[in-house]
Amino acid sequence: RSVTMKLVREIVLELPPFIDTVGVFVDETAEQINKIADYCNLDMVQLHGGESPTFCKRMRRRVIKAFRVKDMKSVKKLSKVHVNGLIWDPVS
Figure 1 (cartoon, rainbow, N blue to C red):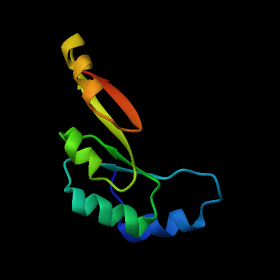
Figure 2 (cartoon, rainbow, N blue to C red):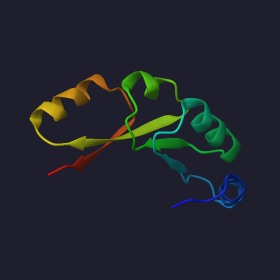
Figure 3 (cartoon, rainbow, N blue to C red):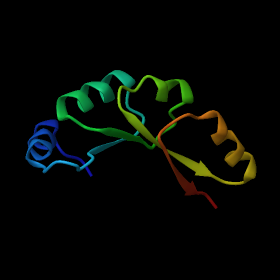
């Protein structure tokens, strides 16, 4: 669940071509996410916190955004978010 930036960088540098690397973040600052993604040579970031559409636009990588989905009203909000991928996390 948690690894050092140094270890991630070492792993990424050893991967063969055509493998996408993704860092998973929860409620981290945009500056910190971009810094880690740059250092680790990540292809994408996956956001699992309360990040807004504006926040997502500040990422310098492709973005996968996880959303808690409770009902159709929460699904309709997703149309305002422009990211590269969505993860729906059902909430009971």
